[in-house]
Structures are given as structure tokens and as C-alpha cells.
Length: 249
Image 1 (spheres, rainbow, N blue to C red):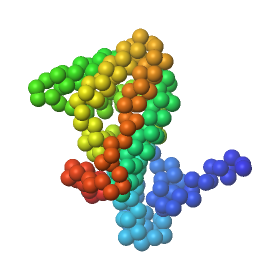
Image 2: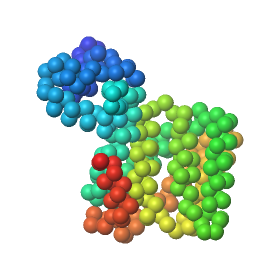
Image 3: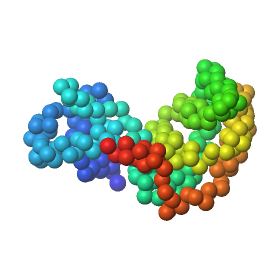
Image 4: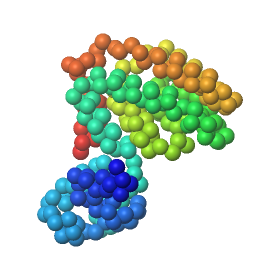
């Protein structure tokens, strides 16, 4: 296949607006023509342009603001993954475990590349997250440190210049908030998890990335048992239904 043929393949996208952005090399931050102008340019009805624009907006590829217009956004994989994932979980909550396996392998595969790029300030932030999590677990009443859990894992990968990895990991934590928190309520589980987190942080701080990766893998083994209540017929909580409904609004 010639390079020219390969370069033409993206233009087969079944979206006039996305083809327009690619063909006209519209850069992030730049505005698209008005809906009327796009309708004329693409040779489709105004209603068709509106429908496509809403899909592209939902995928996070453009931003639409009244009286300002439509601006192209930096590419972000997370909205598309999240939309599809939450739809899947609405059909069958057990898909959470399938996606968890994907997330596990993504984190393990990119661990060394990601943590090698962390800065001293990132290490300070990671240690602060561990401290805050222990305070929540040891206070009265006890708090589950979900935000710290999410932030810690995402911080390990924050310097990785790979939008697809970032998208998968970001979507995972949205799904975890919707489904995982209800599954892992045992405080002994959370305390054990943060023991691993502390090990991971200190290994990275010392440049021992291999030991940190082993701690990550051991930590993820804690999720190997699927609670019996999560199956295709499981009832979703009100919070889960609310989150799923919100994402499709």
C-alpha cells in the first residue's frame, strides 16, 4: 500500500464534520463554519449537520457555545471510551470486570515508561495522597479514600504522552466510581490496598521501578474475586442508574 493511499484512509469516516476537520486541517481552538455554512459545504441538510455536531460534541471532539460557535478540541479518547463503557455497564454490570482486566494490563504494560518520567514534585504529590488516604481510613467515622485512590493511579501515568492509555484509565475510574465502590466496601480491603500504594510510591521514589511494578501487580490481584452479586441480572443502585442516565443526557 502506498503512503498516499494510507493517508487517504481517514477521509472515509462516516461523518461529514470529522472529514471536514481533517481535510481542512482545522486546529484545536479554531472555529468551524456555522451550521448553515457546513450544510452548504457538505451538501447535507441543516438538521443532518445538527445531528452530526451533537455526536461529535458528545465524543469531546468539539465544543459548542451559544454566540461563540463551534471550536475544535484537542483530541481526547476518554469521552468516547466512557460513553461506550457506561452503556455496556448499563446492559451488564459484569462488564466492569472485563474492562478491569484491560485496565490492569494497560497499567502494567506502561508502568516503566510512565513512572520514569515522573518529577520530584510528582513524588511529593503521591506521598501526600498516601498520607491523606491513611487519615481518612483512620478517622472516625472512617472515609473511603476514593478520590485519593483515583488520583494516585492517574498521577503515576500523568506524564505519559499517549492519549489512548489516558483515555482507557480515565474511563476506568468513572466506571469504578459508579460500580466498583459498591463492590469493595470492606475496610480491610482498602487498608491493604493502601499498603501496596505506599510501597509503589516509595519504590518509584527510590528508582526501583521493577519492585514498584510487582507491588502494582500484587495490589491488582486483590480484585481477582468477583462478588457473587454482580452478574447479568444484578440490580443497579440508584447512584449507578443516576450516573448512567447523566452521561447520556
